[in-house]
Image (tube, rainbow, N blue to C red; front, side, top):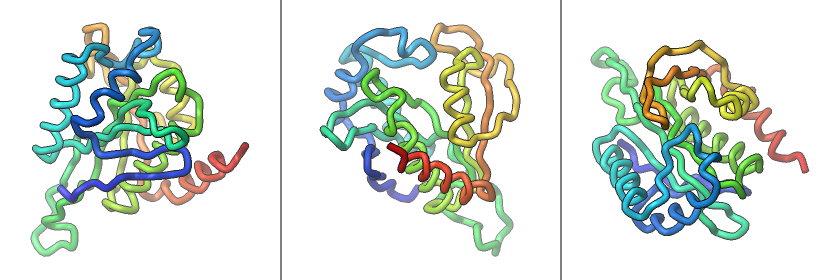
Length: 207
């Protein structure tokens, strides 16, 4: 797996996750738990340490690339996100993509932000930074997203950034309330990325 760099924009900086982010993540996770109704976000030191260590194990295994989301204006950690389910397709021997370390497809998820960053440019820019890295850096063919089918706020946000709704996967994953979760699936293709990127950049330039 290629080393993942810091992804930096005007509003957000995505730093490869490590244990030094623990204190900031723990502070970011405090407050009204209703905000994290659809996402499993630990609010104790032991829970957050286990959360970060699990993400780092996935990174070491080449299955994920987790980040801490930092607000550039004050340097505070305001959340977390990651690439995961990194797919490397079985290209035929001799094909230009055969043996590549970079993924051919991936998912973006485990994304959460604290109340101070919700509905700000941070979320839009963080998604743009990750999509740009996936398509322009890795040369991925597809990026997908899954969210709890009940999570209307997340579903609306995915449509706003230009992802296409593909359908509902029934009893797809364990939900944050420990029930079989129906997942709404969305995706963006490499062929769609140039136009979508331009729209996102225009949104970020608005006051």
